Length: 134
Length: 384
Image 1: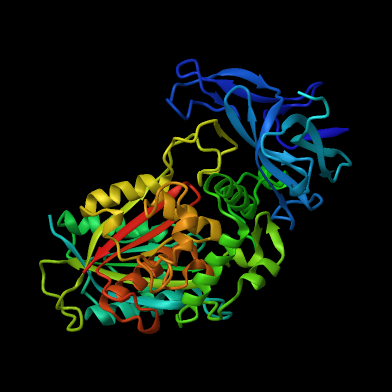
Image 2: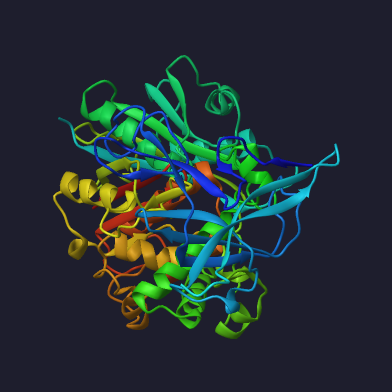
């Protein structure tokens, strides 16, 4: 069994997707879903799913466990640009910054963080270097 | 509207002080500022206290210990810019004629290690997305990509500020370092090494503001007092994914002004001055790249020009526009609620010519800048 680190943030299907929304007024794409568009304050943006692939815009690796984190270190964190015009902060499956380069294709994955007290794997969304040439 | 003068400043050194409470440090700073201002009980009509981790009624606890209560005492939380926010509120109240004299102080004991911020939701911590150094690293990498900054530049920011801090008895680190030592310290989050990050710590700072058209009881500052020309706080405009508002996503756009730029633009307008008029700057240098980004966002150089500004020597003591002559947060450490007011204390002393070996000669216009989570960006301009 596995559980999502947070319900309503992403779908763990094949392929996985981020649960975002698009503002009916200004057209900007949002992640995560929100009560109102942060750019124009229009209420109830329309739900959309964001599945990538995207391109790498920034990246680093976390070398010491931050507060409240029970998973392994090091792990990658980065920003990926999606074709919908949105930049998303996410974990990266690659934890060696030297193995990554700006603009490289990235695809969405589901990644296990740790096992909880009930024996379930806690999973989150992450980006990995694309296996298929874009 | 009344102009606002700074008639007294005081500081409790920044560092780690076991057995010394948040209140203890606040008492030291406030007492020193009141003494300089030549006032005591009944000498001020309001107090604003900046703190992020101090807890309920931090300001009341300090002023109760001094036997000075009855007036409004308001705690202000605006992250790294808490002190700027407190100054903004106090200055506005004086200008509006509500008060003649206001005490503004900040006091803080930060938890040890990486800051655990209640800003983040529990799932963000569980997913490893609540790492403050990771956000610093990502911003640093983008700045490196857009401004031609190298790790050598980042190390030289640290060397500069630690050289300045070696002459500051109120700093946590008073020892110089070298490029080799900085680059030899362990990588925390690429491209940032340990020595390129400031230490969260403890400290307090206090400032007395007074209507400038009233005579000051303080003999020392009665002639040519320091004027608070602007005190501005701004939050963020959404869009930049790596903004201090710390969103999970943003737009694929690079033309949206940063909170610091919003705040600086408003402060320059309020003061009727521009970046070319400045003689000395204390800016947010929570990490080495942040100082370079701050220089760009404050308009001290063109966008992309911060590496050249650093390399020219302009921002070192003796240069055209010294940045962080106190040693900056890289030398002093960062007690959130006291951080901005610590900068203001340094700049008031610089404008008065009291800074000894780290004095910026002839400084008459000074700018303080803090920015952090929220987003909160504070810019204060002082003149003499």
